[in-house]
Image (cartoon, rainbow, N blue to C red; front, side, top):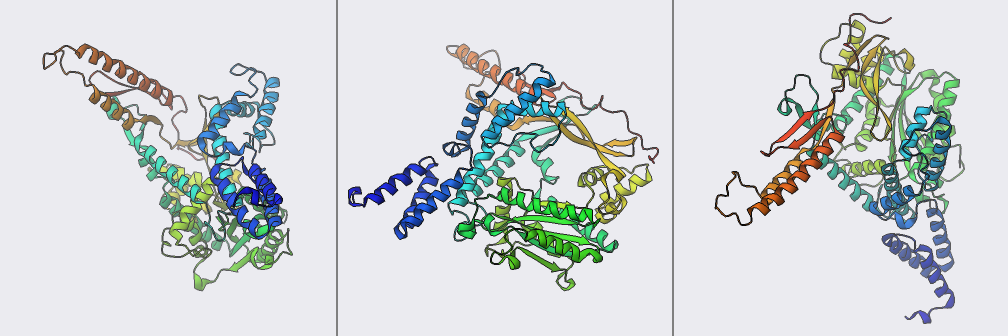
Length: 602
């Protein structure tokens, strides 16, 4: 039907709707217009109200909607914004009186585009911390990273707002986000496989004597390996359960969900919140609970697991340990703040807050939380089970949960009232017994995986941090960009007994890529092995050799410059085609004297 055949009001609505969504990336524009057209055929007024509501919620995205289509468009836009920032005194020494106004200006400039400036969550900052924040804000790469992250979350928010995720659509995460996450995992695995690190050693004699491993080998033996992460978490929660039982505590299992206004599936009640908004709301309510528990001197411990509903709205599962005398008070307080807002909405009493008493017939307290731990990591031991909310295999849901947490930057697990796991991990690095009996007992408990004993020796559940007999040592290092990084390097017991537990690993970069590029370079125009050409033809050989060696020299120079900037070695390829590295830095010699474990501090 030609446009002239439509009523004037329909043509006006058609032009209005197309102008309204013209700023969106093409794939979202098509989805929105298609949904709008379908609604318009049933009720034109309701369709216009719906479109205005959706576009109003998309205005919360401060980046231009045309810039969020891809990571490339986002980083290009960020680079343009970076060039327009205030640049006075950049790169020169400035006083504290100049530093503070500069930070305020750059922070306000970043907020205009929806970026959270570094230091925004701190009430007070030292001059060194302000300088570090300014170094971030004055770095183009920081702007590009923020733009990529913001654009990715904006795309996912649009998928939620347009109904592409939720009831009757994709569950937990959009197809686009899942495919991007899978690609990131694949690229990360390839990067880890091709990049190598070397342990600095005084006894090493050249490149061949260095202890060299790939990043993938290092990751496979750490908590970056999902199975190791799951096993460590299971050991920790089991140890906490045993320590709680030994202290006479009882266990409860609680599930907390946000009000309906935070759920896209709630329809017209949805207030436009994204998963990060909902997580902040739940965290705020939990902070109120902790404040009242602290005032009443009630101690609780346990584990919190965050999961998404099928429309990406987060909800919490909590396994908590508390003394029997305080159990009812804790439950009453949790329920009060879980239902503090919109208490009268339909289904609030049944779904917003649920609590289960631990039934020994169903298993111990750990069994209640184990499924949620596995589901949020790698679905180990529950692969054949089906998800209660969607009916999908948990193996598929697990991948979506990890992609969801990665996209929205949501912390999936948080232990409550437990000693820091960093001390546990550093002690497990030490293989030889220590001469200090008290510290050796803690090290032995960590080495044997006895988390209950470790908790008890560290002072018990909810012990103040200042009372821990063992803590970690952190080394502060300034990076090339001017920012300051803290890195755990060892442990300390008391005031004088300490030990360095970390080896100094130095990045060697992409050795496989460097060697393969050199080999392909040789293969393209291979130089003769001798000074004479075997076929006695010197017609084009000088030109070929000169062309090859010019390319070779550029490649070798770039490689040497790259490795000298990124590591403690300078690398180059000699005339024989051998990959050579030479150590140029020394990291630990001047850092600390030899540790002594002859006595324990009081």
